[in-house]
Image (cartoon, rainbow, N blue to C red; front, top):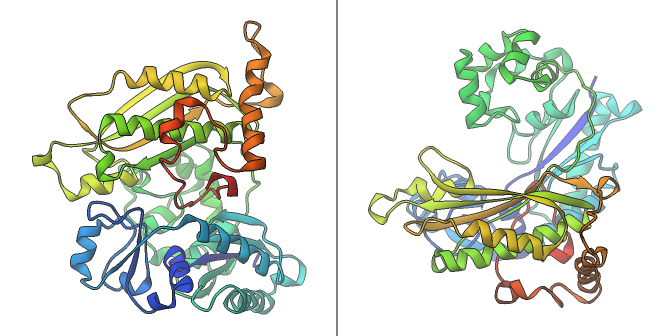
Length: 420
């Protein structure tokens, strides 16, 4: 029996740009974080994908692949606006059960909706309402399946503007045509682990029993994957925020240690605001800086590695344990100490920071040695900025960088309006 509809927007960021600017329709465009040859493509229109351009392609390479490629600087605001508009209009057809990312939504079928014909009719209604009320060039592929995980796979099987139905009776054998990387959660590292267990294809994977799945994954998640592949549903465990992080690719003019520090200070400020808004205290600050090799040793993949750690990439990592805090000033002070050990003989490319070891407000134990009034100051600044506008008041430590590290494209997390 069918249980879930999964909606995956096609080339979402590029499609939004084409919807906003009719002159871009039907043309190969690439959405980029900055107009520079040594950055990477964030999203490509289907016209650009026809030339082999995809997310992560170096812009200089993309231009060679498609001489007529049009670069569009990413505009985060419209992507968020369209996301909320989409949710508003699809609600006319059926309520959204899961916002899986900025361009992926899931709907749980109930009662007679589980009937194949009714499920297909609902899927078509979702496509129609988006086309009519959001934009004529905003398309989506839809998967319908017995569980949400398989529905996501189905949505990816026919693009663009596809509709794929997978019945439980077809599982798992229908998935043998796929590659291992087509399964959600299997990336480079997981594929390497599978190879060590002599799993090189979907056929190899599907031949494993439940116990072997657990051994390969090393935890209960492997059992869940085994069951999902067979169309079963597993009980969802409520998750909580384990970390708050931000990262930023430095434009060429800021690839020096002073500018990098300015940017990471702003990222830490943004993370501290989120920390307080979401009701957490942190006990650990970590920083991560991607480093460029010396000029004579640089290759294209050194620039692409900013989207994830790749073999041979160079990094500067530091972490410090803290007393539980929400205070921006304390976090900036800890950051300054970590920064003192940065390597002088390297050039920074990307900076990132993580607040972890989080404790919820209700579980936080105040320090006996801290003035409780100190903790009120950051929250007071948050309230003022929420009422009168972003960064109307701020700590002096970020005065010179308050316009740095603007919020860019959101993927799995949808930023609040006051983050822009």
